[in-house]
Amino acid sequence: MFDAVIFDLDGTLLDTEALSQAAGIAAFADHGLAVDPAFLYGLIGHDDVTGAEMIRARFPDLDFTTLLSAWAERIGVLYAGGIPLKPGTHRLLGALQQPLALATSSTRKQLDLKLSVTDIAPYFRQLICFDDVTRAKPAPDPYLLAAQRLGVDPARCVAFEDSETGAQSAHLAGMTVVQVPDINPASGRYAHLVAPDLFTGAREIGLLPK
Image (cartoon, rainbow, N blue to C red):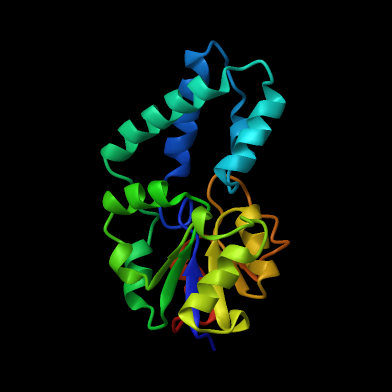
């Protein structure tokens, strides 16, 4: 049924969102602010530029440069200890026969760091990141570029996402979308299937036998 499978990274294959949230809460605390976790949840799925705009709008008097520095430093410490994979990641990536790609909102530097402390890079033929596109998610550009570089029709691709922003991006690209929610619940608005985990999603969408 499908010619390729394209994955989001953070919150979909890597359990990074919880680490990022913890680092963000600590970084805001360093600046004397008790940030509402719900606000940080709203940043999930957005690229750094969009997230920065949201933070500036919410905290216009904040020393933004030092906040980002503190946040990045804390994330780096957490990542150095290793990034846990989402349940079923190796099992699924190893079972799929189609060519695989990543389409992430991480920058190239961030992507390289995350892949350097995990062991999933060899599964993927293409790695699409924020630096590769003009428009980030929720625009369809990352997924369209991934399909183009794989040499496949987007309509023949399955995309795995955790966030609404990412699911919208893959949906607009014309792909079949499997959404496996992480921290935030899934509305299902942009998904053909909402699944409790990666392997269940792959089976139910037809990538693997039931």
